[in-house]
Image 1 (cartoon, chains in turn green, cyan):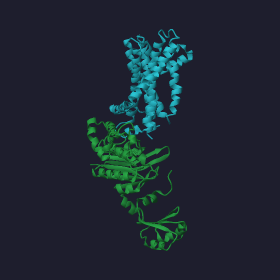
Image 2 (tube, chains in turn purple, cyan):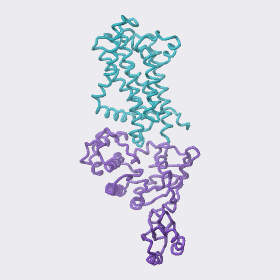
Image 3 (spheres, one colour):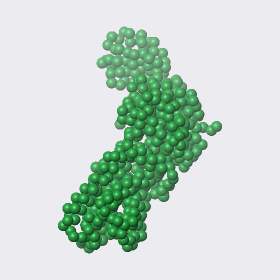
Image 4 (tube, helix red, strand yellow):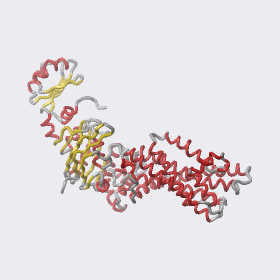
Length: 304
Length: 261
């Protein structure tokens, strides 16, 4: 079977602003792929292009063997979408939301009703079946949105920041469910701002910045490839003076941000030994993670 | 604006699940909705009809009550469709993001806008039939020809739904709709022969009136209620259809532009 999704060199501008600049990606069945990037990096526009909701200025795209945007409608028959902002029908109950949504895919009522118990089970919402949407918690709404995206038994599911605004318990449950979906052979494409989420869930990741893909690989390979193995974060009022005097000696690379110095080293032992002798500084020693890669590639300045 | 925004509407039967969705929401609030539909036109019909009617021996060749009844059917169907297309349509498009949810499925924007127009017209049909039922109950019309007001209510509904959707496509917020009601809908009630014959207007305003869709609706409705076949009915229908088709097309182009970003 060919790739579930295959995009080549997609481009999109609004006015003279290039929002998506040469996006290429190939997704295989059962893969979970993450799009990371600061606000305004072009993640949401990329998702809209991939779904055929926005027409690209150039490039080629095949989604589930259909050319998009020309045959986006046919492709979307087998696609599920979890949008960034909840758009459940507030006037309906939990079960009615699923029923009404299934009809948009041309499904018969009997067919949808037969699927509803399993979908509610999957979303841990069986006991909320006849409850109206405004009374649900944020986590429940998110789970229902995920269940709604599965009503047509899609092959690929697009998730735009699926756990933003959720508490840790709710987030862990979503992660568990997304993992189950990949085990079932569903393909997932998600955007997120949570590096631990991306590191835990995604088989492969792309980091986007200013509309361009700046890196793509598995989380582990990205860390190995782009960053030193160890990080020592050093805090204290005198950290700036300390860093300009000593940091370059002990670390391959360092950055000072406010009252924190981030030292990146392949061997942190000499630095740690030195820090024992510095009474005014506190420090945290940890392995390098995806967030370090992300900040290295996209910078520390706020994107607003 | 991209050229494909101007391509002709691509319609399909996929609009039907959306229409059913609106119906399901409406069924949950049907009782209060029907009271709203009937209260406003009844207050005008009975209040003005009995109040003014007792002072006026006749108007346009009939009792003032019958004269006003025809206008009431038309303007209440105009109002139902306008409110639905503007406030409820904007809520579904903007507040609740219902359209966004639907567009992630195989249903397209063209289907959604078509469903909005049809649904708003369905509310007009309901409103028209309700007012017509009251007209019969009050004995204001005895002619079988008055049954033609039922399809007329649907047509008037389609026409004002399509025009209203243009406003919805342009609206930055709900406040914008006040302009449409104050500058378009209310003047139409006064210029289109709802409360008094158009011939009472100065000649310039009579010409304006002849271009407004509500005038053509009233010109069909009034003879029908009086049991007379309306003169030039087909040309009035053609005007209403023309407004419907143009309004739908323009609103669709504007919605495509607004939502393709």
